[in-house]
Image (cartoon, rainbow, N blue to C red; front, side):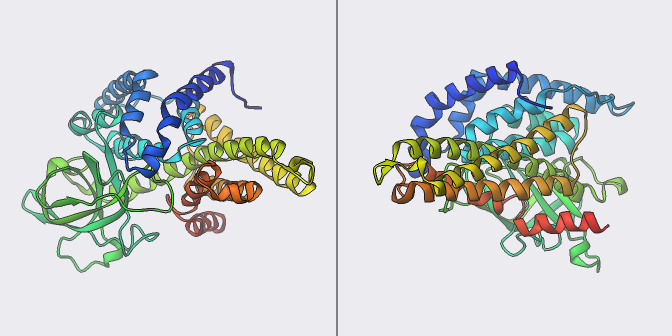
Amino acid sequence: MYQWSDEHLAIQEAMRSFVDNEVVPHIDAIEHEGVPPYEIIRKMYRTFGMDEMARESFKRALDRKIAGETGKPERRGGDNSAAMTLIPIIELCRHCPGIVTSMGVSTGLAGGTIMKGGTPEQMERWGLDLMTMDKIGAWAITEPDSGSDALGGMRTTARPDGDEYILNGSKTYITNGPYADTMVVYAKLDDGSEDDPRKREVLTFILDAGMEGLVQSAPMRKMGLKSSPTGELFFSDLRVGVDRLLGGKKDKSQKAAGRESAKENFVTERAGVAAMSLGVIEECLKLSIEYAKSRVLWGKPIAQHQLIQLKLAKMEVARLNVQNLVFRHIEMSSLGMSPSLAEASAMKLYSAQAASEVAMEAVQLFGGNGYIAEYRVEQLARDAKVFQIYAGTDEIQITHIARDLLA
C-alpha cells in the first residue's frame, strides 16, 4: 500500500511552514487587490532550491534531446519526482489554488510543451526561463467560440508566407495571459486547401510579449481563482518565423504534432487537478472539524448533531478516494507509466466533483459564516468550482471516458 514516506512528510511540513508564513499573509492582496502571485512563486522556488533543480533537470532533458538523434535513454522506474511535485501542489491548494494554476500553466504547460516538443535551440531560448520561473508562460488553446471543442472548433489561423507564418485570431480564458512573457499558441494551418477546417493540421508557435500584432488583455474579473490572472490574447497579422514553430521546420512526420502536443498536455493537466482537489478537500475538512467542535447551538457543539457528523463523514470518504487517486498516479509515475487520456479524465472528473461538493458542504456547515469572506471556506468553494470547468468540463471528461470504454 502506498503512503507518504518520512521524506515526503518532512517536505510536507516544510511546505506548510512556507505557506503559513509567505502565502497566507498575502492571500487578501492577491485575491482582492489584483496583486499577481509570481513573486511568491519565485520566492518558493528560491527557498526550496526548485530553481536549481529545474536547471539540473533542464540540462538532463537537453542532453537527452540532443542524444535522441542516436538513441533515447531508457526510462527507469523508481522515480520519486511525481510525489515531490505533487506535495507542494497539495499544500498550496489548501489555501490558494490560484497560485498552483499560475505556476502549473507556466512551468508544466507552457514550459513543458517546449521541453517535450521543441528543438534544442527552442529549449535553450525559451524553455529554461519558464522552468525556473524567471519568466512567466501562458498556454493558449481555448477560443471564444470553441471552448470544449478546442481542436475541432479552433478558428485562429496560421497562413504560410514564404518562410514565415501570419497568425490571425484570438484566445480566451488564458491563465497568465495578461502578464506572460512567453506564450505557447495553437493555430490551424491555413494553406489554401479545401480540407475540412475541423480536420486541418494544428500548429504550435512560441510567441513573446511585445511582438507586433499581439495584444494581451487586462485580467478578467472572475467568480473564483482570483489569485491566478486570466486574460485574452489577440493576433492581428502577427508574423512569425519558422524558428517559432514548435519543433522547427515542418515536415510530414510533424503533421499531427500540434494535436498530439495538446492531448499530452490534457493528460498532465487533468492528473494535476486531482492533487489540487486533494488540497482543497483536506483544508475544508480540517476547517469544518474545527468549526463543528467550537460552534455551539442548543447548548452543545454542532459536532454532536448527526447531520453534521454525516457531512464530516462524507468529506472524509471523498478525501480518502481522491488521495488514493493521487497515490495511484504517483505509483504509475515511479514505474515510468502515464495514465491514458481516459484514465486522466476519470481522475479529473471524480476529484473535481468531490472538491466542489466538499467545499460547498463546508460552506453549508459554517452557515452564515460560510458565506462571509473572513472564513476561508468561502474562497475555497469559489475556487473549487472551476475544477469542473477548466482542463475540460465534466461533460468532456465523461465523453473521453465513455469513448475509451466503448472502443
